[in-house]
Length: 229
Ligand SMILES: [Mg+2]
Image (cartoon, rainbow, N blue to C red; front, side):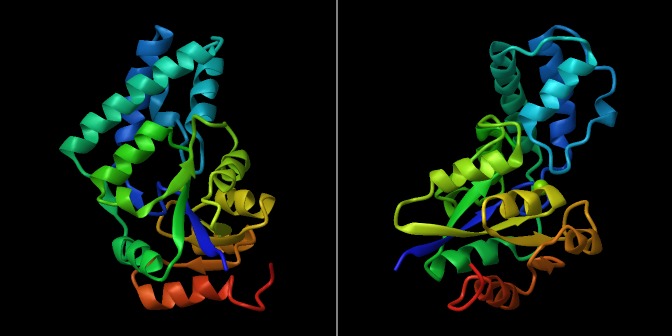
């Protein structure tokens, strides 16, 4: 029988990177596109993907966004975020280390579905002490749309595992789960209220992961024998 793979979003779900991304987006944009972005404070990151954000920034400045500029931008962005996180480690939400360790002890494999570009995703996880918990993933530099990032993560899942659940903190994570036939678990530690996550159609909404045993029982019930596929 295959192992179960559980996919996780990063920001708002596992950790909060203390806002280091916003400043880094501003300076990396200026470096890669050659002009300052006028409204860094107005950028929206909740549930967003890094590719979509930088393309919107370029469009708002009336600039084309070439693949080369985007790669340059991501390289500058990830370096700045790495430096900032070395000074100020991410805040881990309650129960996250216990939940991920316990899911792995129970034989499940964990993957990533994140809007962060690859280097930034691993930077955040490493500075939070979570990098060894995850076996595979797909990232914000793979695709601008989250359902497509989820599809890619599923394609990268180890062959002895079957992806069943996606855990996130926004309605966009719920949509990405739905689009790929995964159960949607939503956690209200991020910037979206539990009622909104329920309205978005999440199969399970948790306030946080502080009660590890209850969280695991409720997540496993989503893919237990007899549970809807
Ligand atoms: Mg998130």
